[in-house]
Image 1 (cartoon, rainbow over the protein chains, first blue to last red):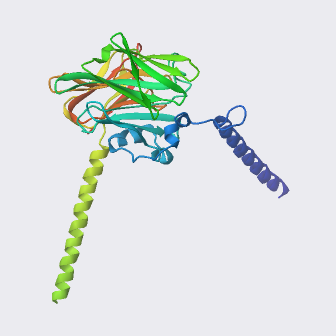
Image 2 (image 1 turned 45 degrees about the vertical axis):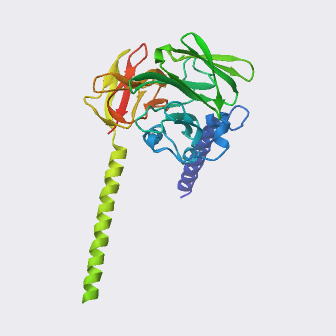
Image 3 (image 1 turned 90 degrees about the vertical axis):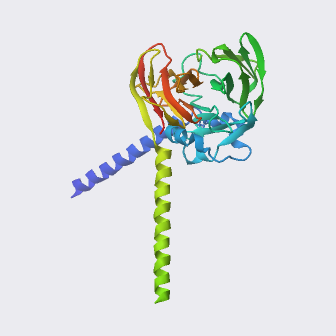
Length: 215
Length: 130
């Protein structure tokens, strides 16, 4: 009887230790070396913590489900800008995977006009060299509408980005950042003519991203 | 008797409205959830996959979905009935495990296509609707 009681206590102790170990590992994974909670990627974008939240856009419902937008993420949809370019588009952003990923979408006023989304994990260790550490994300959506070719450059920039410019067919053009988002419409320009995007950080450091190679 | 018939008629109407509402809700939910996976497997470097036919699309998304956390380059596009590339995402980095995903969001009668834009082959998942 005593042995049985000891065995039971041993099992309880092992269970408690396992639970404590699991909790420690979980805590360690979500904190840095100083024991401070690691910030989520969304914390680098002031827009997610300021201003009113927007209703999740129905156009991106499929994507939100696919990339893991949770209940909290769903309350942090933001419209970064509206009435943009030829298609009176709106640029929206939302976090995913508990704020560790960021998604942004360009959605036209008419559903038939060009629209695109991109989701990424800004701080993922898996990002390739040349992409890792970029404090912004940019894409260029090419479309043919009413027979006219054009490209829309858009994306998001973290709070530490102070300026952005883009090289189009050999010429640099300034791009305005507003509410952590940026957008510029290039009617008549092919995607192939959109080259480097340069971001200047608060520190003066410049980061380059080639739209053609993705690096 | 008249009141009984009236009540019965009201009940039949109510059930009818309920049934119609349920059918409409199911149709709407079904169309919203409709997913066509037109590629779930290997694409060689520079390779692509295309839907077999045209349809009214609301979106077209793609991501590398291999057994590694490494990001691979992908792109998505829509072709019109003359096989002219009407909408093109450009090259973006993707990995379905990390959630890095590209999607076209506009509607139209298109063929959907996804590309492996990387220099090595890999497994991709490309989905569109309906």
